[in-house]
Image: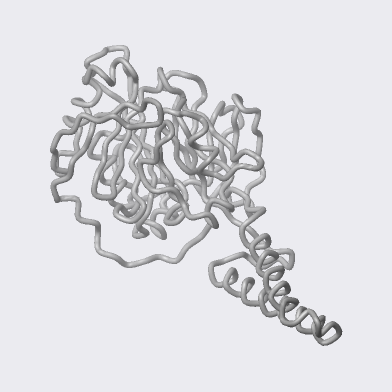
Length: 345
């Protein structure tokens, strides 16, 4: 989904925070806390994480404070998968029911109304105002014929109008890129307004780390698990260069890098690991309102991410592990329009 560029100062990441090595058990995050400064968020920091005994045993580590959350996952132990909201369950309920090592929200989403107009924030406000007004007028018309019912008809009419506006506004959204999952037999190749070629993707072609990839354009047909409709953040070990030669690939970053609220996935190869067989890890960063996409890109590049992508932003962001949320769950109306996400299980 396209968005207007915003001008905002970069997020400061120089304060002291507390991070935690953690494991998830029985829905609770058990932590061993260590004080770090985020200036030290670098390859040395990641080396400490992957050499930790709990990480080597369980293939997962978590931490965060001050509105930030991070996770590091060994893809040999917990493979990347696409997940889909279950019928009759909310988006967040589906996520915590998976007991995944980590779960997040997914691609950008879009919708057009029956008349063909694109649904925007302003259009949603108009839908609710029109629904309430239309329902109220209809209710008052019924009251004129059946005065004994009083103004209950008007209240009922407004309620029905608002419910119709909710359905029109927050259901039936389409991802802005392809969604493929061999594990769950998903094969959604149609994207909103055929936007897939204008965004980026994350996926894996097999089970080893070398098969994990980030790319620009449509999600390839032979990906086993992956989603398109994402925001390219890091490319070839550096934050996306909006003034570089790959202007098309950088267009999302140019428009959305200043928006706060982001969950980002990075592919980090490990040249020298405490365990030689560990070729690389997945690093996930999340923040509901502290990090913007540009800062997330910088942080992932500092820990050695080869490539990284961002999920749908702001009110859509979600990140958790097991039955716990590492950042707050989205509000119900944002959960209603979300369908797909990424996880490691």
